[in-house]
Image 1 (cartoon, rainbow, N blue to C red):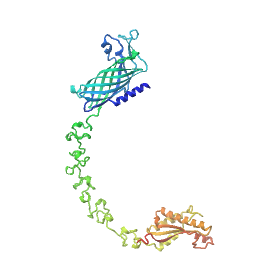
Image 2: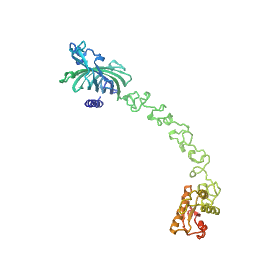
Image 3: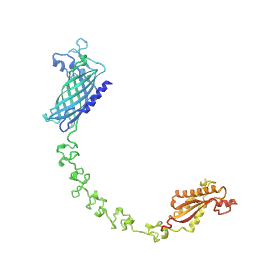
Image 4: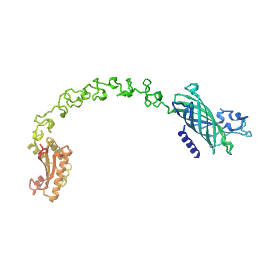
Length: 483
């Protein structure tokens, strides 16, 4: 766990600071990839300093420790004149530890022995000052560099500081993406008791590098210093400003920047050719009048066709552009006629008066509605009652402004209190059934009379049957007193 904590600290420091070659237009870079650690340089074999430390640099199979995954990450910032500063964090696992032991039967020609120390982790945090030769050699692809820096290495349970001279080369695929190859000699400068693990190493890295944060904010290939519109991608001929619709008018001066338009209309189109820009034209696909925001008025009544219910016949605005009509010829204009297709007097708002025939029919239908004994629910299994209710609805709909009273009656069986409630509940049941069928609730009222209004003698079964009934009566117009 402590090794993971070290790596976490390294990554956090890296993300907070800065890695390698970039320029003034893209000052920031981030790189990541794999690293290899070569412990051969600290084995002590060989004659002389350089032979001991820098011989056999490419003995990859024998000496290099490579973690086959993402094992380093770095960020950097360009500071000018080819220099950049950065920070890199790396992790590796040492399974090839080179030591000088000529007494060991397994030693090579130089006396070196390669052993696997087991779970030996390597962590490094390194700061770098780097110089790029890219501008000097005038290359856009090949970018050689030299670097110097320092860092801190965690080698198993040991840790020590290092001085890191290095070199590298980057091959740029684009202005911002490249393949970075680098090596540095990490010279250990701190002493510990365990000399086998307090050592200098070579560390080689290979990975991708991405430059960012440059001065071409909008990414149009024109750097901000030359870009008149640095925050939005544009065209070179317009100094970096966009012409989204391609009409030759820069968006900043184009009243309709997203659609091809005319210079005379500040870059806006006029689809119907009526001289009114589409953005100001309420009817952009058909030529119209400026007074009606570009819409036509075929009948000349001052109402645009799109808003005119009768676009080919002139009519007043209050009637939606249609002339006032009297379809049933009853002298009441349709606009004031509650029954525009059926003639009726003006006193009844153009609707017919309720006839005696209709009232008689209502009487017959209402008295044929049957309830369950002692209840206000319609008789179970009775097919006649639904038909009667439907017939009543059809009659009432012919008189949309007439008011009707639905009355409930019982025989004298039982107490008056019970009969009053039962008759009221039955009248309400009929009323609610008619409302559910679409009859206007404002045209209906209900009232229960109990056994107070018999139509036959309660002394016989036949008379009582007649007294148990509902009736519907016309009680006037809902406009009565308001006309």
